[in-house]
Amino acid sequence: MSIQKIKKLFIPILIIVAAIAVFMYMTSTKPKQAPVEVQEKVWMVEYIEAKYEALAPIQRLYGQVESATPISMSAPISGVIGQVAVKEGQQVKKGDAIVSLTLQDLDIPLQQAKADYAETSASLKLEKLAYQANLERLAHEKRILAFKKADVARVQQLLKKDLTSTQALELSKEALAKQEYVVVGAELSVEEHQLKTQQNEARLAKAKAAMRLAEINLKRGQVVAPSDGRIAKVLVSQGERVSAGTVMVEFYALDSLELRAKLPVREFYKLDQRLQAGQDVEAYLTKQNQASTALRLDRMAGEATASGIDLFFTIPEALQYVRPGDLLEVEMQGEVIEQAIALPYSALYGSDRIYLIEDERLQATTVKVLGDLMVDGKLWALLEPTFPSGSQVSITHLPNAVSGLKVTGVAK
Picture 1 (cartoon, rainbow, N blue to C red):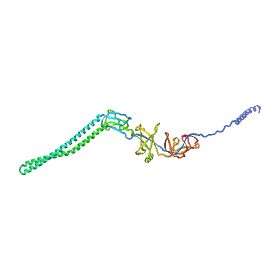
Picture 2 (tube, one colour; picture 1 turned 30 degrees about the vertical axis):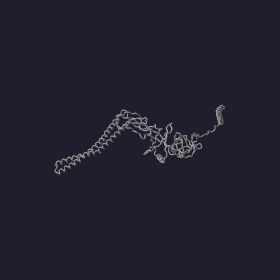
Picture 3 (cartoon, rainbow, N blue to C red; picture 1 turned 90 degrees about the horizontal axis):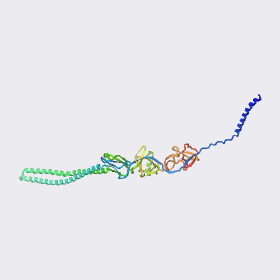
Picture 4 (cartoon, one colour; picture 1 turned 45 degrees about the vertical axis):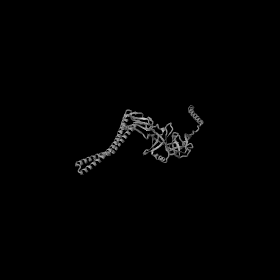
């Protein structure tokens, strides 16, 4: 092989050897990277320390306002509406005018009733005068009857002595018979007095009742508020003709307002036992940006349904601005539980699990919810104490919460 060919082969080989030597040198002198350490993520949560307390759960109820004694004011007689002094929803004081019929429609029946009463009173007095006259007449006719009897006896004696005729005796007896008939008529007139008096007294009582009714209708026709209240509906207008019994105005007293709320069946027996034991049952109505208002449980309904039983709460004076039909939400306090723990609902996972913080890690704990509780205007869960008092309970709701998750807690 010629020297020229050897040079052509040697140069590429030398370049490859040099490149390998440079690569090995650079690889051996490259700085070594420190190994990556994987650190566990720590989640920040808020917690509160659980405390055993004597707490009462609340029962949230929804009810409707209604009037215990709504009043429908009806027309006492047929007539024309003379004046309507109120409007629907208007608040009135006791004695304020509401609506009235025209005076003519009310006054004429009263005048007729007074005339009938006066006429019957006069008839009764006239009957008393007639009775006195009949007594005098009866006494007079009886005296005449005695004379007629004596005359018959005298004629009979004369006839025995042949001093008179038989015709004279017949005439005397005829006069006696006529007088006896007159006496019977006089006695009947006297005896009729008691019946006529009873009839006139009955007519007088009837006329007096009609007059009293006309006076009542006159008063009822001028409708005034029977107490402080509010007009629910106005059903007539001025100039309208109405029949007797037509409802003109619907009214309710402010102190008759109450709240009807449905209590679930499962809570009925607990409440009934508390009432039987003489315990006070408190309920509160809380509206946004307003202080809570206490409501007094007045009574329970006489009948229950499959969905529960109705409770009736008295509306206090502070809430008399509400109207029948308003829907209200109230919170009724249950029986006090001597040892219970209150936690915000953010601490609850599902319906029966919370997480305690132990050694900076979450530990799941099963719990039993006993009810609800209002704390600073927010709804909290009332739990049965199944873990020690003072335990740190996470109240930050983590979607990836599991037992063993590392956390750092911040006290609430």
